[in-house]
Length: 285
Length: 159
Ligand code: SF4
Image 1 (cartoon, rainbow over the protein chains, first blue to last red):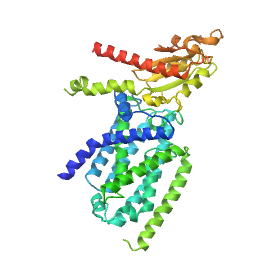
Image 2 (cartoon, protein in one colour):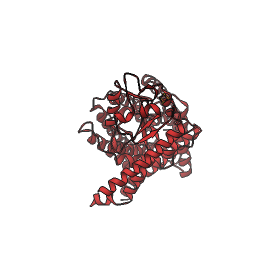
Image 3 (cartoon, rainbow over the protein chains, first blue to last red):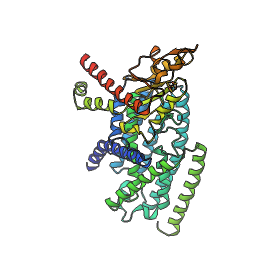
Image 4 (tube, chains in turn yellow, red):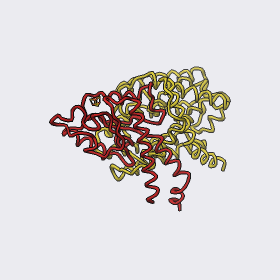
């Protein structure tokens, strides 16, 4: 009963948390560039405005793809707050990500197509890494359940520090921050118009933005699993991680997808291997 | 029932407020000397920082609310301009920038120049100057948002 309550609470509160996070993100980014930046609630204004725009649909199945993308994001957040199975959460959000790409493939626009191809490659890059991180968590705690993580008396970060860095890579790709904003940049005039999002407009784009808020919350939630022993530690870890994300976003240029695939897989796999071998050799599991 | 709730409630207020607080713009340069083009981009630099007003240079007509046109329209690009305008979902506003955008400017007598932007698409705000100053362009966008408010009120009266 409690878990269902948590899930409902999580799903209702997540978008608001997401809006605050995204708003802070934009203000901090502006500060780094010595600008004033938009108001904190700017993401809310953007979504509400998009919601009221005249509908323009490129293909009749596109709305369906958007609904599934949003539903998958919501379900995965609900599952997370219900302390469910990590693998299940992972697969549900993967289904959503694929439907977003499918919607972009439905229309013949070259920007949308190129963006969709790149998004697929991004998915291909971060999914194996997340799987490895989840496998690491399983090795250490002996279960894929989130409740098992909470049962540990030492934070995961102590024993899985390198896996946390690997997870950071996945986080950057998933949040579409530089240097990995190759499928759809936040700054649309720079690259590919808006990549995967080019052909979504109005209300569909608003729904995609909402789904993205859910995804941000989910990913930060997964991040928080690395420090479950104290609330304070969790908040500090999340804040540091997100600020690091923003700094990396601001100091790096956009790279090509080949570079992303090579560097992220190479460093990600090496780091995970070192971490897992260290776990074994230290007899910690 | 749900529809009624959405129509006369706080949600509607939030949406109306948001429409003037988040103008995403697409910028099309029809040609001429490019001076106004550069001044428009100057608005986006840290010195003027239009993101304070929620303005984003979105570069995609399908996401944009405001179309900023600089330069004089010629027979070659008038179709492109029309197409960009048509691809923008309503509500939308058009801002013509610079003498060229207003009338054709010093290029108005050239054989291929059609004239001002309003020969092709309806223009809501005219920003004069050669080149128009960034402050004037920002003022033009703010003026355009007032126009958007008027459109909202007219729609509210009609319904
Ligand atoms: S109005 Fe003047 S500065 Fe602007 S494009 Fe025309 S000639 Fe250039």
